[in-house]
Image 1 (cartoon, rainbow, N blue to C red):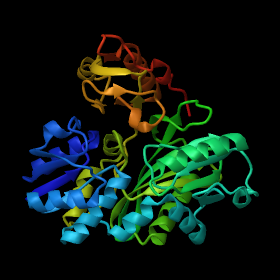
Image 2 (cartoon, rainbow, N blue to C red):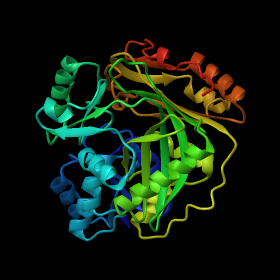
Image 3 (cartoon, rainbow, N blue to C red):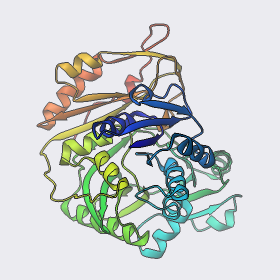
Image 4 (cartoon, one colour):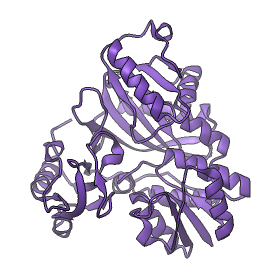
Length: 410
């Protein structure tokens, strides 16, 4: 069999390895000839992965048996559409992929089906009358962007006008959501929908950089610091979303805010979590989310129960840098061999231009740490924080060590 793997970021390295283990020939498609997953694939094609017709031409020329992607919202549109047009298997229809990738449509469905979410309006031209009943702070976001691009917090009308303009240029459709800002701890929840039933796999806290007007995640921690009552409400929210979007067999990632009494859903997607989330899920529950995507794509039944939750403390730390030209990492491999790091992941390639840390696409690398206790987690984190380096082409450490803050009780 031949698989066309669409997008070549870090999670696709794991995906390609699992496909090869099944005896499947892998062809990687990506815009970037330096894609980090390229060395792991059997073949590579440079192509605009958001251009459906271009990817379809590759699939036909390479005579692939199926297309597959993990951890990417917009790429799911390409994979589902090309699969549908060519009669190839896919776990989601193009119509559903469009619905779950459009934040404006998503918000309307939330409101219709009673999924708790913030008051909102979406528009291509800022109309203050549409948001006259909303109170600052407000949040603007493009309806069809990714990696938190264009998502900004507005404290007043002047900022709203400026950030709305930015978001409208980032949005491919030109449509922007304006919504009320909701206070609360951000929780990322991983579900697997099996025959229409939403099974909660893991829930973790997301910590963000203390920016005034941006939302940049730098850490995900398991287990989430939420009550059992909150867990049950989240289960119900997951089922409502699965029912509302008529999801049958798919991964499902939900981002929400909670004060441990009530929740507000930010957004969701029919995909696995990005970056190193695959490993956190597997360490926490034993569930292999990437294997599940392969099985779903090939029409196999996925079982998500019973789960065997580990009484572990796990953290994924996302590493950023000051502007420069990335050259290499230092200290990571040694810390992994010592058992301080469970694993680490590199998102950039040697010679990559590094930008200011403003969106999740600016991540250079991440580390995963597993511990038996909170104290052990803190100890391992502190050792890692003191020894890892991101080195630029001039031999200088450009890592944003200020982002790798101390781990505090949640």
